[in-house]
Length: 409
Image (cartoon, rainbow, N blue to C red; front, side, top):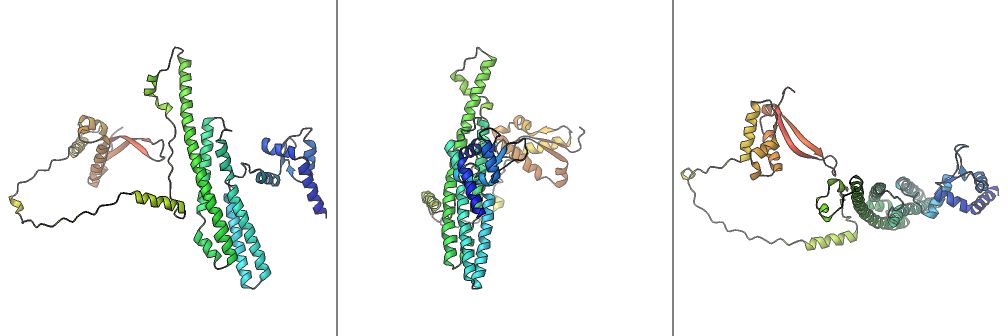
């Protein structure tokens, strides 16, 4: 009876101090400050272990059990990542299914019903956890991150949400429908849970998550454009501060400085979900729109008389000018210790009439790699490069400098 009275008193305390609790949860970061109007609530909630305090100088804070309850009923941003929850609940489901099968094999009807009830309980918890984890994305989509005023911080938060949504999408992909089918077997109750309820919830989550990721990416594009405009305004203000006589004109827009175009480009790989009927229809329409390949007619073979090749005139194949320049560079390197710039050679030799600079670099590098190992080891190749701003790990080569190994610095 005492336990019932304690529960009733705790619920009564929550109802009595509900306004203070809600304000502390939503506006004070879960803290109850020691004020005249909060003292009665602090005393009552502390009695029922619904608050805690790490030090006398620190404010009283709402307990984890109370904040978890408020997170559920308010669908707040605190319920954002279901990674560990999904994994733990799935382990519980697997354990109860194993127990259910073992009890059923032993003929323990009461125990098997108990395990089955637990399996459905944890299954419903899993479905609720999956659906709840989507609430954070809906909140940010509705508010468009307007609670963050700084555009740079807003873009950072947007990217974090995209990464978090991608991680959650990876969790959904770990569910193997074949594994669910194997676990369900021929049992009608397990088939209802594993082949109906859970797959239906997973498919709904996939659709909502795909929509959320698309909206978040579009919002990030918008923020990037806003950043560009903000930088343009800041640049103009700075220009006015330095030069009061400056008057912007349309002609200035034809030569924008590079600092105004620093928006990070987005690389969003998209993969079709072969298990999704909607994606299957889209892929079918793409295939139907592809041009048909015409069947080529087979050429009739006409035998030609055999000719004596010795009587034919010799045909001289011109040497590629790039090969000639490469040979000249190698000869020059054998007699000098000075480094040779491939870019300077390209312009001096007027190779721009024959090929692009990138082709010249590739031809030079391939010819050097084709040299005998001893001759190749006598050359030192230095790439003048700079990292790519968008693709991490890639570099842009602006020049190749060659010299003999062992040159005195």
